[in-house]
View 1 (spheres, rainbow, N blue to C red):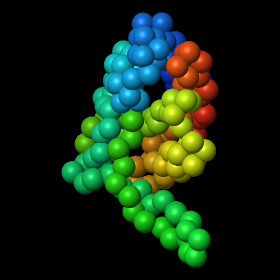
View 2 (cartoon, rainbow, N blue to C red; view 1 turned 30 degrees about the vertical axis):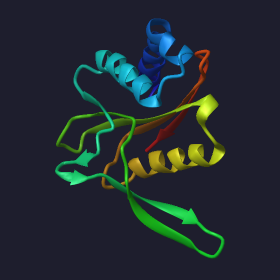
View 3 (cartoon, helix red, strand yellow; view 1 turned 180 degrees about the vertical axis):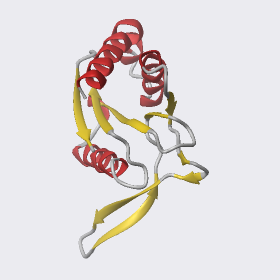
Length: 149
């Protein structure tokens, strides 16, 4: 775990140093995720690093999430597009799943939804070893919240 955290901390620092202008310009989270994925790819040469990769083998990724309404609590299988995954495509070797939120554009409800998704990715059938919820501000300050299978 320490090695994974160190590599991700280094990748985030590189993102901020080399691509900080993306944060300053308040671009879409997908652009930030793309640049971070490029940097992560240099740290994990034995893995594939993909953005919004929504397949597990040939099936669409879905996770069961609970939703509370005023009257009922229900669970639905929802299609998901994780911001970044570090994995070996078309296999069960799933190392890391990352969800990114800009501090300025997130709500507590959205944050909790991303946390639920990350926890779901750590369970069967996906069995990612680690999850990372990354909150990053336009000034480049960030907080990394880790999930471990």
